[in-house]
Length: 164
Image 1 (cartoon, rainbow, N blue to C red):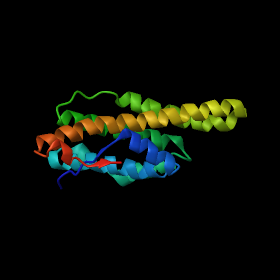
Image 2: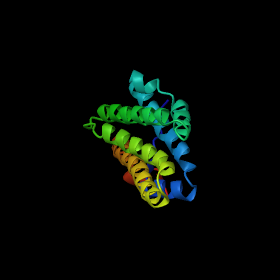
Image 3: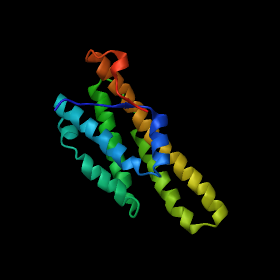
């Protein structure tokens, strides 16, 4: 299967996530994990090719109740992103930072129920900032890969699919 990556504006990612009250995130998460899996299949990279995007989304959804699966899923996604970067000849980096941002987001989310309301408001801001920073970091790094990949494949720069 030939990969069909989608270059998406990080602002659109954040906007769609906010407008849908977070419901867009699992759909986006599935898509980016599927794109990385498809790249692995096309390039013959076994670990990427064998990844399961649906399982990653279930771990993300379970993260609303149990933190560990979501953090492990994001760590796996960051690792897949690093493998994609190696395939593209780009120096991988930032996998630990993405995982740390997600871990902080989940921990601060849980902590909001354990502190006074004034402190909870501050924790919600930290939670959302870390969450969006992680999503944007993943999308920006993928955009670099997909733009380079699409341009290398001969598609004119204006033909890349951009979600508004």
